Amino acid sequence: MNYGFVKTAAVIPQVLPADIEFNRGAIVRAAETASQKGAEIILFPELCLTGYTCGDMFLNELLLKKSEEELLKTAELTKELDSVIIIGLPLACANALINAAAVIFKGEILGVIPKNYLPNYKEFYEKRYFTSAAELKTKNIELAGKQIPLGSDLLFKTHGAVFAIELCEDLWAPVPPSSFAVLAGAQIIFNLSASNELAGKNDYLRNLIAQQSARCISGYVYASCGFGESTTDTVFAGNAFIYENGALLAKSERFSLKEQIIISEVDLDALNNERLTNKTFADCAALNAKEYRTVNIPLAPRSAELSRTVSKTPFIPKGADFKERCREITDIQALALAKRIAHVKARKLVIGVSGGLDSTLALLVCKEALQKLGLPLNMILAVTMPGFGTTGRTYNNAVKLIKLLGADFKEINIKEACLLHFKDIAHDVEEKNSVYENVQARECTQILMDLANKHGGLVVGTGDMSELALGWATYNGDHMSMYGVNSGVPKTLVIHLVNYFAEISPAPVREILLDIVNTPISPELLPADDKGAIAQKTEDLVGPYELHDFFLYHFLRHNFTPRKILFLAKTAFKKDYSEKEIRKWLEVFFRRFFAQQFKRSCLPDGPKIGSAAISPRADLRLPSDAKSDIWLKDIK
Image (tube, rainbow, N blue to C red):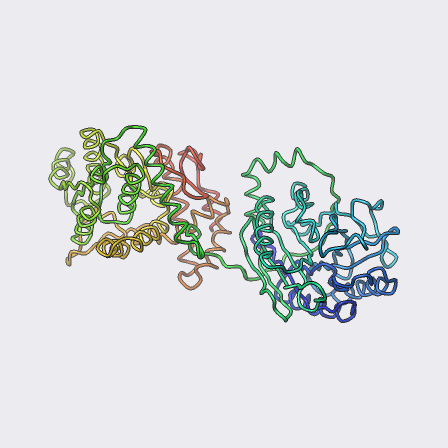
């Protein structure tokens, strides 16, 4: 698929033990269905051609002969499909019987991979029949008069994708074969399995797959047999999973009586970039190099829509543990601030509170930090500084919140000082340009810094990561502080964190916090409208924060090209923005991101929160005069 995606499928067909013709028919039909849905590589379970539960019939000459015949027939019947097919079956080879995976494409069998680790404990007794890959002396197997590559040292290479195969128990070994395959270049691992179901085993299995895909920085596609296998002594629930670097993309329904096909795309660009970034991966490859043979597959890329979900809010925690993750994030912020308070022996936390989102979150974090230290909340000196654009709504919310939290409150109106400054620099007060705005921001910062000096305090910065990425901060104004608690928190996450605090706060505080969340985002540096409402709305000027945070995540986290970010944004926001709108704001993002690096080059200290950060001491070392031309051209 285009844009670095490979569409994969994991299939749980209905099989009957030893009814090989029936099983072949089910495999072919499922392969046709998955291929029609755009799947480029299709995985079936372990020994699916015969069924896993054939017992001593695996040693029967007729079953083995029929198994080989139906393998060849499967290849013939799927030769028109533009998909690679991986199926499991028993094969006789060099006076040994192997539990094998066969790779099929366009009517040809391209390679056979034998199972390495044969479970022979409790309900498993595979060594009764099969020989391990480690014991084989040959590198080829003869099928239909042709010599086919054989071994667990095979990599398969398609258009930009390299994959390897392991079978069931291989994953459960202390060092799975896939660990070596990825170091040799495999980006996706396919696992044919027949793991039976036991109470509690599924959670362990999922953790095992997730951890292996994360440790290997790879895609991991898993298919295990289901309904139809014998239940004489064991039950097979039908587990299929597709993971990418620890994240679940798709899963099957357990205990289903029907055939199941799960499909999702593995993002090779994301995996490749993660491996480039993670130097430990390269070091490990150098120390643990093994020789692999490569089988090339002339699989042409197929263009199709993504079936995987592209989150509109990649910075926002997902799932049932949302509140727990919010708690973790604010704990990181609070602990970071607590350490700085203890180190400098601050007697006051000086913070400007405007009634907006960022200063609200920073104020709440100050409260959390002091509570961790067992210090009184009146150590917070919360200053509200009304200016030319301050509205009654934000002012009242700021004052009420400060008092409800028990902080020390101070109000300093900056209008007179700004007017005097305009006079000193000969600026016409009616000319409401960047000078008009920035004078206010710098006046506020000067007040906070001087109050901190006066009280032996620490100025707590409130600016968030999104503003700093876009340069939407006044240099040496709100851009500066003594510790920036929000510098690792993007705007979309700020909103959710304030909502989280609203949920856990008493009613009077909750009411204020929810109103702050619903207030238009604004620096309030330009006068209000005729009705006293906010006239200067940030998102009207620089663009929607949900788009900019989306761009920021995929650019910083994965180093994606603008055209790939555009493709993902069109998928995620197809109901919200036109392609023209997304292109417009994507160009704004890249122009501002590069042009405003000089502000980030001298950021105050602040904690890294998630997997992407913009601190020059953490994730982003970028010259302030770097050119943005190639990224802007890529958009066009």
